[in-house]
Length: 118
Image (cartoon, rainbow, N blue to C red; front, side, top):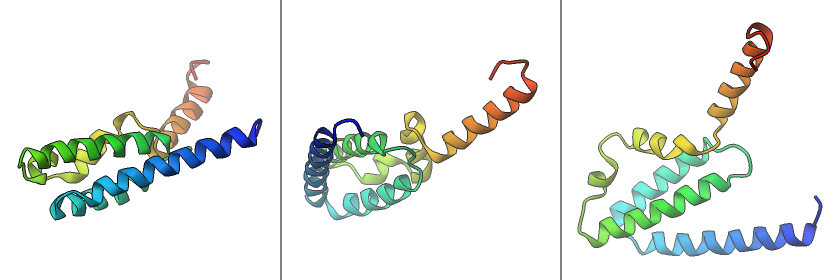
């Protein structure tokens, strides 16, 4: 760790932002809170690395849910009936364990059989 003070300041800021987002979640209608909690649990089980990809995705999800709730939409109108597929779509650009394992598999195979195209 090159600069521990900067690191801990960054972590403290991230915690403040997370707590603020959770306050916003608590203000959502009950169905939205329930679905957000389940989505958050599901998605944290897939995160890889430092998790920063996930915090951005979840913050955007709070924005989406707040707007949909303000518009009077049902939460399942936002996510669709297949909430897991909705989550997987959100995770498409994030660094996940699955993606990390897929990359490692492809690198290993291409390194051995891909004529140097690893």
